[in-house]
Amino acid sequence: MMHRYLAGGLTGGRLALLIALVALAILVPALNLALPESHPLHVPTYAVTLMGKYLTYALLALALDLVWGYCGILSLGHAAFFALGGYAMGMYLMRQIGSRGVYGDPLLPDFMVFLNWDALPWYWTGFDLFPFALLMALVVPGVLAFVFGWFAFRSRVTGVYLSIITQAMTFALMLAFFRNDMGFGGNNGLTDFKDLLGFDLQADATRAGLFAASALTLAGALLLAIALTSSKLGQVLIAVRDAESRTRFIGYRVEHYKLFVWTLSAMMAGLAGALYVPQVGIINPGEFAPANSIEAVIWVAVGGRGTLIGPILGAGLVNFAKSWFTAALPEFWLFALGGLFVVVTLFLPKGIVGLAVSLKARATRKPARTDSGRDTDAPASTDSRQAAE
Picture 1 (cartoon, rainbow, N blue to C red):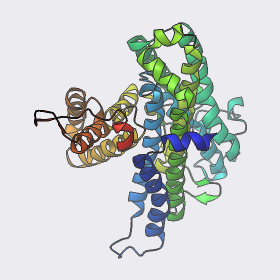
Picture 2: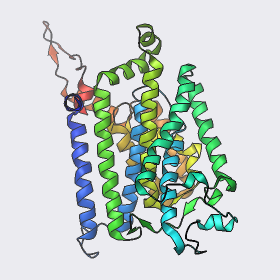
Picture 3: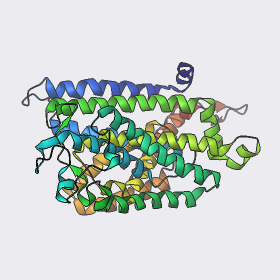
Picture 4: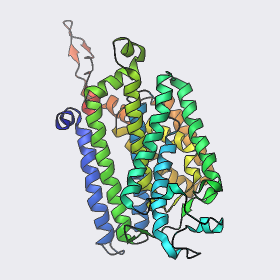
């Protein structure tokens, strides 16, 4: 069944992106580990980590595109799901430190010893096991999204009101996680990680492995998104986006479809957070900041929402620009980001992918000759956008 849907949605651009992700998962670790640092093709470890972080951002952008680009739900709170997945992985990594912490306590993390805690909270139970932590990185964001969506969609909260509520949700979580009595490290968060599955997190091989895992996970998520959006379910989601009242009038339970894709998107964002934390080495309440959710929206807008390829490209390009600006011209980064969003909104409403599709359609448009001998423009193909992808 999935194969049939993939065949329908696997256009040339999407297939090229999937091949590129798999190739990156093989080539980058190989160029990092197999070649000496003096070799011109050697990829330094810091670049591997940086690109791995971009891939997790791309996974977050892809998750956001599913709800915004295909179902019309503009979420300004997806950073909450990303951070919850990150905290789940961070708790596992903290448990792996053991007695190697500053205070040498074999059970309690350093911040709990510092705050005079005498036992682990009940919600830390099981996080000494990697499969459990990985499961929680999916389940916790998924449950939060399901509960939130259950009340919001059944109450028919839509548009800007829903966006504001999602932003309030992530802001409330940020304030809660800042508190020391929450048991998540307060302002400092979770850090000083040592091992992942017994592998040293500072080792080049571990960094390369995390990069490969991020690339392959993104490729898998893209395949899932292609199958979903190419199915009848995806067509209903697009109908909800374009005419929600009409879709409900003809008999579809719109809130069920929205709840499904909203929950799935939150779980994908949580998985992105779980891959992000071991690569950057820290997770703190700042990841819940509403500004992070807004940045994710800009990634999708720049790349092109509703295209699947666009959000991945947008996340990579914007974060590359952020890395350059914050190193060369740090005081101008926010101005550049705001200006970029204004330019995209005014001149590229369909993003970079939309611009590429328009240029390709214009280039391939064949003039039709009328009876009078005068050339006129032939109508553009209705599926040119999909073909160009």
